[in-house]
Length: 517
Image (tube, rainbow, N blue to C red; front, side, top):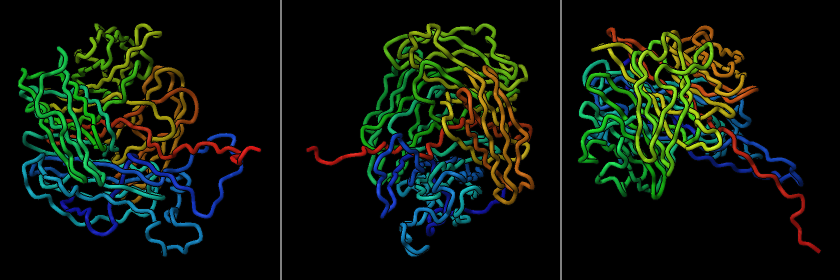
């Protein structure tokens, strides 16, 4: 990785945003149709994101990859967003922007108090369809917040990937910078002595936010302190070490619930294990009666399932493993009982047996589903050559989802269809340096997991993005594994794909809003 410095302060150049807040406005001078029989979907015009402090290690090397897919209405033209009737370039306020900059109140290195580095600007993002990368090294890289507007907004995504080659935070840490929200669930966190888990709360907005953190262990709510009314100033970040929030005995499996009383935050859990390396734990999909955890690597040496039932009822779940050949029942783990308000976990040894897979959780009684949240802790390698990653439960892709920072011979895209056959279109973008986009249509059979490694842009230089769009059939869930081995350690990270919500539904208009006679 080149040791170039990066700045996201200067001018309006920079990386940009993933769906977090969306605004849609009608073009000036256009009249609403007299009658609309059905709702219309139009591209969003504004999105926001938050990227946490990437690492506390002096030897960390971080790359940001920023990308928006082409082909979503206004998102296809870099000049979209200018007011109708105005000359191109005259109305700068209406031009598309993509700006990501250091959180003004950020402290780098997980709260050590070091002054954040203000790096130089990368190439300007001007056109959908081509990723742009920028690098930042060391422990003084701050949290970033930002927004994208106009043509650069629909489907915008930013991947934050960090390599720490040595030390207590050794590992490959990957994170899709998150959309601000008010409610997050993180199963598979820990307050164990061997773990150092930080909840990073980052506020991308112009007003302050106030957050609460609740911890749930195997016996229920953990008695905690300093977890209510945590202030997160505007454009600022607050890292919170989980083990300092409770005086109860260290817990191997903890579910973290982050909510806000006011405002919104981006939230992610940074995990560092003394023996297993480090990675990010992203928020799980919203509580649901059925759960899909896609993208377990074929060579996983250890898989641990962590589940939490947030409601008033216990959950009884059927467990199935989805492989390339179909769904099977894991040996010794056909069912799982999850008590209300308690975190339940189970080890699944020798789960994949050399085949990429996904895990399905479904209610034993389909007529009485109990919502749960879940995540997997996955380990590759053995002994001192081990590496950890996490797979949170993922929702289905309804329209389109993208993951950035894919690399030749290092990326595996896993697709799974839990209920019915599904057909999807996959597009590999142009490379950040060079390359011609490529696409293919894939059919995923019901109950199976397909692992794809061969879709790469022709003449690739640099990294590329992968976009998944459902074409027909049942629901599809997806995850990307990025594997970058180093010094015999099988470093890897897994990102689940989330629908980008690049369009918004416009309500139908009444034909006659006049005064009745």
